[in-house]
Length: 196
Image (cartoon, rainbow, N blue to C red):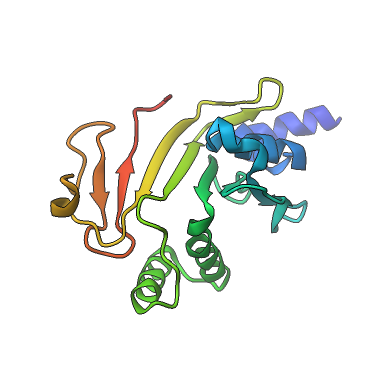
């Protein structure tokens, strides 16, 4: 009966969404650290989600890296990794979204707060690794994200095309470019071809 119900749910809601909702704490940790460099995975601080879907710490970290498990409340699959200096920026985004702010409001409020000095901005050169896929799913038997791809953000507050030598839109597929040039949220975006 349970198996039949599972199949029905997979058809109705999509396997990747259902799978994310049913991930154990252990699988959340194992999948989240895949976004981090292999050498730091064992000591990374891991955020994830409890049975109620609440954002919680799953494992305390012992190094400079933070990873976040896939959000079962969001479509697709996405795990991320960043150094600790990026956490105030991320935490403020979570706080504002919890207050009901939309994406545009979150972006602008964090920009204003970094500008006036009330929010710590990410260090110049800090990175955000995003391992994601609209239809990707974590396979606990192989410890792999099937159908996943990487995207990279390199934080460069106030950077411009002139200061970096990079364009403000990609020259081609997978080429780096500066997003939000001249602002505190400026960063270099690199999106390699799918399946990387």
